[in-house]
Image (cartoon, rainbow, N blue to C red; front, top):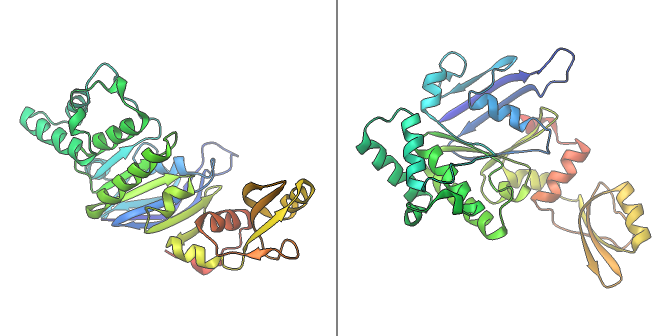
Length: 299
């Protein structure tokens, strides 16, 4: 599976800034993370890739099929879990998936039963097949969403903001599910939650205001942030000063003081300790500073 996005742009109206601005990306087998703040253009890109929206210019191909010229062929290879997924609460999980399979054109009752059973097994919901979806937890509902996206056995799965609103245990379980499903398909995970990317994705892209800021391995982005992360202890007045000059990643109380983790180009205060950067440090530093080397943008 290979998805190629070439010089893609989308503008919603005359005079409006582009939601996607000359974006080029390549996505292959495995889990690919699309990371950026709210308003970065992630949702617009997802809507284009899921065939819901026509770009202003540019091209997308999915295993050689042009997205605009061969929409039906692309849709046959595509599964999609939107950010706001819902099911009919009065239906059981099995009934809901059977209904979705009918909508997808599976007319054989035997085929639908096999597809539904396989999808429920893939997401760990076989034991609640007869439970009404209105009783599902947030994590169970997200897994049901993945199940409906898997009904067509897609080669390319798009998941939009998959762990928003989930508790930590459900978030970890869902990340594990995506990792397992990526063994035989390409999965695009769009999120603003750094932890969803660093723990599941082999490759990532950072976008902001519709433009590509980085594409590559998460560990390579972290490597580029070496020497940019610091730990420093301050009082309230020191916090105000630091936050004006540096980007604060985390704040933790330490007695009457505050322990800050900050990113920046220089030592924030005498005695500040340099620390090994993590993915969150790198994300905050490069999204705020915009100083990613140009060569790192090449697919």
